[in-house]
Image (tube, rainbow, N blue to C red):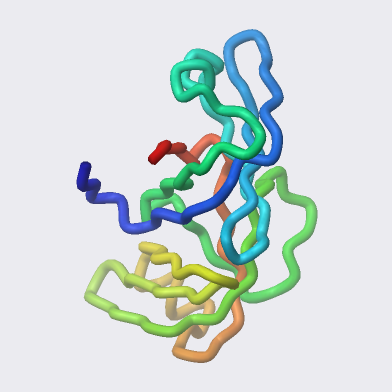
Amino acid sequence: MSLSIRNQLPGTVTAVTPGGAMATVRVRLTGGQDVTAAITRESADDLALSPGAAVRALVKSTEVALATGRVEGLSIRNRLPGTVTALTTGPAMAAVTVAVEGAELTAAVTRQAADDLALSVGVPVVALIKSTEVSLATA
């Protein structure tokens, strides 16, 4: 299956916490970072997710926010430190490629945000992803 989602991060499930309607799934990415996905309990059951299962964490580039400073006081669980490796800007939007340990992410941000953050190749950033915006796929 081919997907248009650019960010496809391989990893292994380390924990599944089922709730009434939703479940949280902790995934250890190949680079060693942990990512949490909040998915429906039905999806977790359908995918037969359990510790040790190989998955891909899928995140649309429009759901990746970037920070250039210390990140505090946010409910966003997924915070991946990295470095800008490429930046393509247009009149309205910018595509920012970020190297994180063992992977690469693309963030689609407004041109104004890229300018305000003074993004350029080599700038350290933190990629922020809400757990509800992480989908999971099995092999």
